Image 1 (tube, helix red, strand yellow):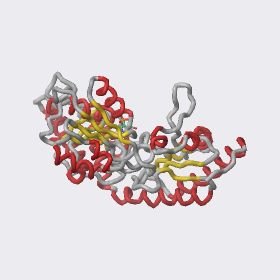
Image 2: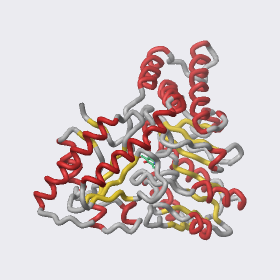
Image 3: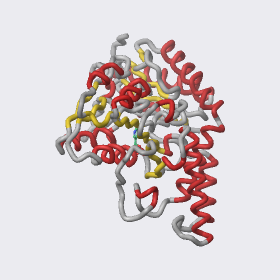
Image 4: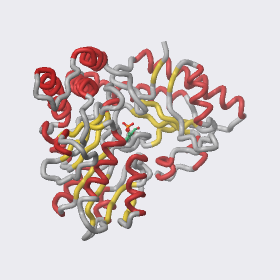
Length: 384
Ligand SMILES: Cc1ncc(COP(=O)(O)O)c(C=O)c1O
C-alpha cells in the first residue's frame, strides 16, 4: 500500500463525499432554478449543502457562494472588493501568499493600485504589528492567508482583522489550508471574506466556496443569471456541491480524528529529528496546522528525496519546479530567510486525519534510508 503524505496538494475524497457525488449525479439532475419537482429537489440538495458548509465556518448559509475552488474564490474576492471602488486604492498583503492571491494582487498593481507586501519573520509567521503599521488612509483591502500551504504556519489573521474592522478596511483570508485541520469560525476571526477549497479536506475537486460577510458589498464575478445571489451566474454543479457539503459535515463529525493529527505529526517530527543528524523542521517555532511538516535535511536535495521516497511507495512534495525543471527552493522558505541551499534541501510532508501510526513509522524508516543513500551518492557533509 502506498503512503500518501501530500494532502496539502490534494486529498483523497471522503467515502461519504464519494457516495453523495455518485448517488446524486445519477438521481438529482434537475436545475435548481426550475420551479417543477426536479428543480425543487435539486434546490433542496443545494441549500442543504450550503447549510453544511456554513456550519463548518459557524456562518450563515446566505453568505456562502459556491465556486470552483480556492483559486476562483481568491480571484473573485480580491477583484470583487477592489473593483467596488471607483478610484485606485492601497492593498496590504504578505510575501507568502498562494499564487492565486499574489498574481491577482500583482495584476491590480499593474492597473494602478498600490500594494504593500509584508515579509514573514524567520519563524514563518508574519508580524501582526508590521501589517497594522502598513495600514493607511486609502487602504481598502488586507489579504492574508490563515495557514501557509508550505510550512503550515498559522498567520495572525484575527489580530489584524480586528484592527481592519475598526478602521473600515475589508479583510480577506485564504483559509484553503486551514479548513479541516484547525477550527475556523468566521465570527471568531472577524474577517469579511474567506476562501475555501473542497479538495483540501476530502471533498471533490472543482468545488469550493467563498464566504462573504453580509453587507460587505462584494461585486459579482460571473454575470448573466441570478444564481448565487447574482455573484456567480450559471447553473450550479449540484452533486459536486452536495459532495463538498458532505466533506464539510465529515470534518465536524470526525473532530476526534482532526485533533489526533497533532500527535501523529509530533511522532513523525520527533522520530526524524532524533534519527537524522542535520535535520530541521522549518517553521517549528510558530503555531502550525497539525498536518504539515516542512523538513530540511542537509546534504539532501528535495528532488532526490521526493524521487527516492516515491520509489519507496511514499508521496511527498518538493520545492516548486521552474521552467527549466530545476528545483528552485520554496519562495516561502526564502522569504523566511532560509538560504537557497537549505531551501533546496527542504520538502513538505502533509498528513491527513486518516493517517495511521504505522504509516508514520514506515515513513520515518524510509526517510532515514533515502537520506542516507542521497548523502552517500553525493558525499555530502552533514551540517546542522
Ligand atoms: C493556500 C492555498 N490557496 C489557494 C489554493 C488554490 O486552491 P485550488 O486548487 O482549489 O484552486 C491552494 C492550493 O494549493 C492553496 O494551497
